[in-house]
Image (cartoon, rainbow, N blue to C red; front, side, top):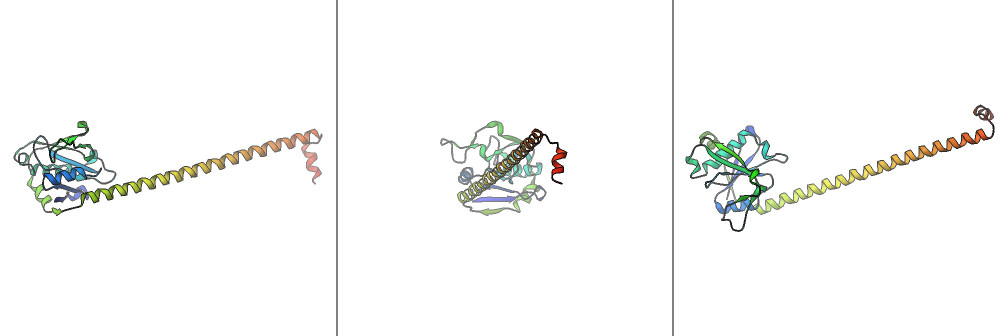
Length: 215
C-alpha cells in the first residue's frame, strides 16, 4: 500500500507519497521515476518519503514550504526521529539511490554522496502534519505499469524531438542549396554580361551605338 498526500496549496499541485512498510519501500525504490525526490531521516530508521516533481523542475528549485512538508512527514514517521528536535533529513534524486544485492529490504545507498542534500528540522509542527493527513489517500498502485507507461511516454517524446530535429536539418539543407544555386546563377549572369561587353568592344562599337541600332 502507498500513502499519498497533497502538498500545501501555495506550493503548487505536488504529490508526496510513501510506502506503508519496508516491503513497499523496496518497490518504490525499484520503480521510482526520474522526477522523484527521496527523503529519509539521517542515521535513524524512518519512512521513505518521495516528492514527485513536475517536468522541468529540479531538486534545487524545490520551495522551502514544499521541503518543509516533506521533512515534517518523514520526521513524523520515524520512531526515533519523531521524539527528537533538530533532526537532520537527507534528500536526493531517486536516480542517485543505489541498491546493492547485499542490502537489507528497504535499505539504500547513494551513487554520489555529494548529491545528497541535508535539511535540519527543528521540531515537529502538528499544524503541518494535520493538514497533510487530511489529504491522505491509500492506494495499491501497479508501480511497474506506471513506470513502463512513463518510460514509453518519454521514449515517444524523444522520438518526436528527433524527428523534428531531422526535419529542421533537412529544411536548412534545402535552403542552403537554394542559396548556393542563386549565388551561382548570379555569378553566371555577371560573367555572361562581361563577355557580351567585351564582344561589343572588340567590334569597335560603343554601348551608345549598340543602343542606337535597336532604335
